[in-house]
Image (cartoon, rainbow, N blue to C red):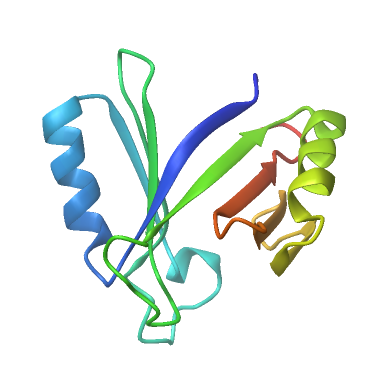
Length: 136
């Protein structure tokens, strides 16, 4: 899998509806995963979207999720996502992006099997780096 750069939008509880709308507009294949699917079955977030990805026939990728923290600020509710399976390349990006940054999630293995990290760089842009696990 080649490394991808795409927007990642956070929503205040309506990620499913928004991502389905974007699918209607842009076409393509939509994959939605809830918080319950990742071990949070007995929480208020259980039926909310932990990760959604729309891939269109023209090669566009849009990702989104419901924010679990309630920190939803329309206009500032997006991040830039770098994802793929080239671990050396993605770790290199992470090292440079996280230098002098505020690290919200250290780059480490997550419950879904990938290595993931999130930081806000010195310019105020939030970056997410996801290195696909084995067999992905």
